[in-house]
Amino acid sequence: DTGSAAATPIDPRFDIAYVTPVTIGTPPQTLQLDLDTGSSDLWVFSSHTPASQVRGQQIYSPDKSTTSKLLDGHTWSIRYGDGSGSRGNVYTDNFAIGGIMVETQAVETAEEVSSSFTTEDNIDGLVGLGFSTLNTVSPEGQLTFFDNAKPKLDAPVFTADLKYMKEGTYDFGFIDESKYTGEITYVPVDTDPGYWTFTSSGYGVGSGTFSSSPITGIADTGTSLVYLPTAIVTAYYRQVEGATNSRSYGGYVFPCNSTLPPFVFGIGEAKFTIPPSYMSYAAVTDGSPTCFGGLQSSSGIGINIWGDVALKAAFVVFNGEEPPTIGWANK
Ligand SMILES: CC(C)C[C@H](NC(=O)C[C@H](O)[C@H](CC1CCCCC1)NC(=O)CC[C@H](O)[C@H](Cc1ccccc1)NC(=O)OC(C)(C)C)C(=O)O
Image (cartoon, rainbow, N blue to C red; front, side, top):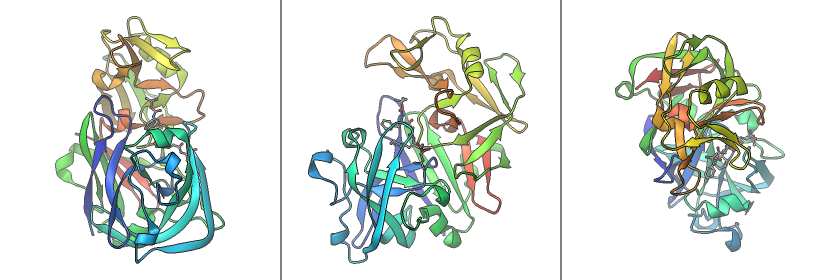
């Protein structure tokens, strides 16, 4: 099998997250989920989520599906890097993305969600596309959609073609040559503890010299920005007039009318350029003349994260063969 599905920005002002339509159950219930390579739980707003915590999200009702089955005695509870979280029970049911159907997918139904999920009415849940070792279901961890779908895919891969302020695509089971230019550069993936962890070959600021130094981090479709070591981040903002590391805004900000250099990163011998428009992420509040940078320091996180600001600049292949690799191509 092969399949494709849209990745649509949830906010027209800036690319904070992307959602993809999925169907669950019989008859199919359609929800808009955030495909997240930085985690491995598939969870949804549901008929079990208290009404006070639901604000416009689509919900999955297992009782309305003839193919749903409670996974008795199983629960899940997750806390994300941004402090948000959710917990609940587990069903298995039919689950499809882009026409790829998995009959007994573990679908984690929310009994509780944190306030930032309640207020984010464009996200009905997540599809974790990290490695199944990160799945939080207890007492037995469950497989991700990709792990369940892999045997029926023409090739054990999925690709991300995320775009700047417009609809992109996730493809499953095939590599669409029309979506990239030149060659795909593949590098090894360390699957411990369960992220798509790889090592970039270095970085450059604007037309400055390229610094060849290994940067190990995760490819994370569920993180909006790029988080790298402080030395790299300060080297970048040194080139931005009026940039400061703002405690109140929680990161590097600068006047929106400042000229920003592009940010270059290496994958093997290949080079990828994040354009200035992506590096000026958004005004700190609507209409403010102060903008928040798309590159921030990872010093408070503990790992480097290549989030959407970087992924948007490339066509990325998440290759699930043994051993897994990750491929990057220009587009
Ligand atoms: C539980 C573990 C097994 C896995 C877990 N994984 C992660 O935390 C990374 C993972 O990719 C999670 C997945 C996201 C959780 C929150 C909802 C959206 C998905 N990423 C995260 O936790 C990182 C959070 C994102 O970067 C947010 C996302 C967001 C979306 C919509 C509205 C507001 C905020 N953006 C965000 O804060 O953007 C700003 C800075 C511009 C405001 C971990 O490492 O702890």
